[in-house]
Length: 121
Image (cartoon, rainbow, N blue to C red; front, side):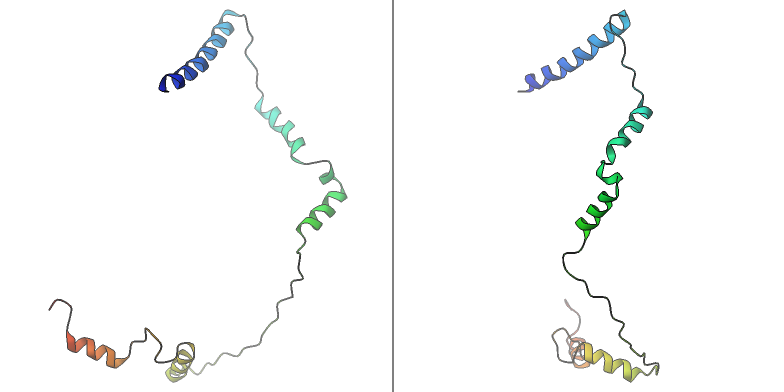
């Protein structure tokens, strides 16, 4: 199978070589490519005829319109407790994660770990 792929590469190389030889001999003209002009011409195809009219804007608005009504956000007034007392913070933390939940490290648990020592000792 490697021979087949080599032949495909050789045929492309051969074609390119033939064009090069024909251009050098004057039998064939070299293609002249104006990239800037091609780019400017391509801009005409980037926008359809419908999009250039008001019907295109209406169609785009209809296509991107939400399928469901989205309620407007409501402002909920909140008041910040600026007492800066540690007990207030602890109370708030207990509301978020009550004591006794899994993964809660208590002072007793830390004391037991200290009494047992470090692993491998």
